[in-house]
Image 1 (tube, rainbow, N blue to C red):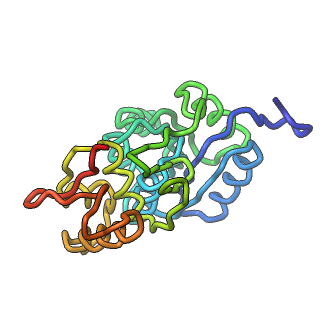
Image 2 (tube, rainbow, N blue to C red; image 1 turned 180 degrees about the horizontal axis):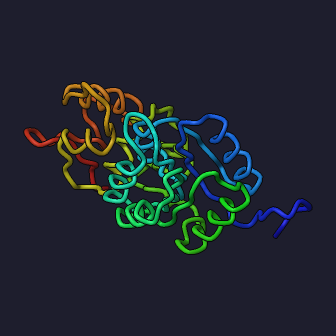
Length: 237
């Protein structure tokens, strides 16, 4: 269905725009929001990794030339972790650059300067091809606990729980595979990404806070369980 401006309102998705040029990022955000999408913008590669892991977008518009971690490294890392649709955008538009981007896992490649109308058309095509926006991200359920990646929300017996991004990331990781033990190192890799000075004690502190929010009795957790000498797991209910 199209509105009176000719914008497609049927296919909506959660889109992460990673671009260190704020004006360019806002222009892309404006056009994608006019298509009905939910759009979050970040300005560097580390933030792109953090938000991609925390919010699980359907598609990422990823600028190659970014500070801290460049877009190619972000693409390579995320492709090893998920099948999220990735559209690379860069001023380096030679054939070799394009092939490199596709080789490391990008789904499409667009050179600068970007036409917003072409970009939105590429996004529509990618969403159709990957099926990314055909349905909502599955809600993870463990007993009375629900973890909703699409809404970035956790609920206990239907009541939302106020979690930080890191707490939610840990909870989503564990709830995705109940019974599997994750070491503290694995939790750091998958939840904290490129952050510096993250220790295993940092993970423990987040788990303590998480239990206070989701457990009826944090001293005897029903959900987030410690496996001594190994790490943490989500209980199988």
